[in-house]
Length: 330
Image (cartoon, rainbow, N blue to C red; front, side):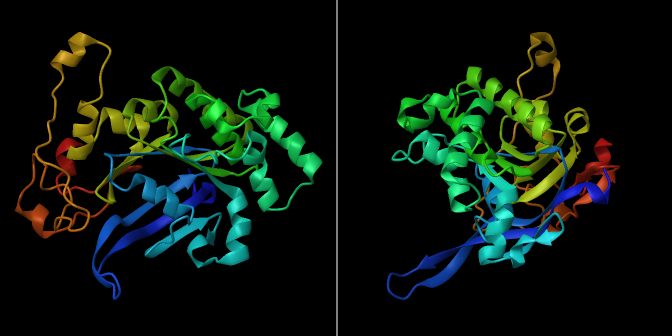
């Protein structure tokens, strides 16, 4: 991939949520370091997977990229335009090109609106179609995601979780965006439905040349859908590589631990492989460890890990890692 193919460039993205004390006079006593200096590129037409444990900052990263949360610092360039500097109408117009599919299909759809109103709402908000055009567009979108256009007059409670998520996908496509953040779009669904939704996303990507940031913690599903994968831990990205390179030759101990927990269908091969069991709990994002964030649970940590923060460097062509001892695994 070349520089010209970069659609989204995130540089040193930071999002801290302040912690206040007091009722009348509120005083800030700390901050939750949800995202703490994240950098990555998303290329036109690719799917970048973002994985990690619950609470590591994946969803916050996705929402901050789209400016649903305004970043504490850093830059997010979309098609060369820094979104952080945009406000009001400029940002609203840019939002046509970026959409989000939310994690919970039960919470992300307004129960008082019909499916037709939900899917057509982006067109109403941006005032880019007449009522007749909106109705036609809604019918096309529902058909596109595998739903009967006659469902437009029904309400969300009349649908299953998988159907609701398809409605969410139709809403995300309404403005014909080029970039979609998929925030764990399958984690709330039955396993049998997950594959259908992922296949739908892949078909839509080919049809409309969409670019995805796919957030998940199911590593096997991420491997299936992603071109490259970024691994996140406690607000930072610790490894980023092509999906096959990452799965076959992980260079960060945390990535190795995550991959060792993924089930293998072959029981003989599963019995032979080495398991990496992490000790302790994830530290608090309010007071993250000094140096390497992972050092408190890392099986190969040494004194330098507490003293120096490892650089996020290119250990191999296209393979980035933040670990002092990554060269041991090359």
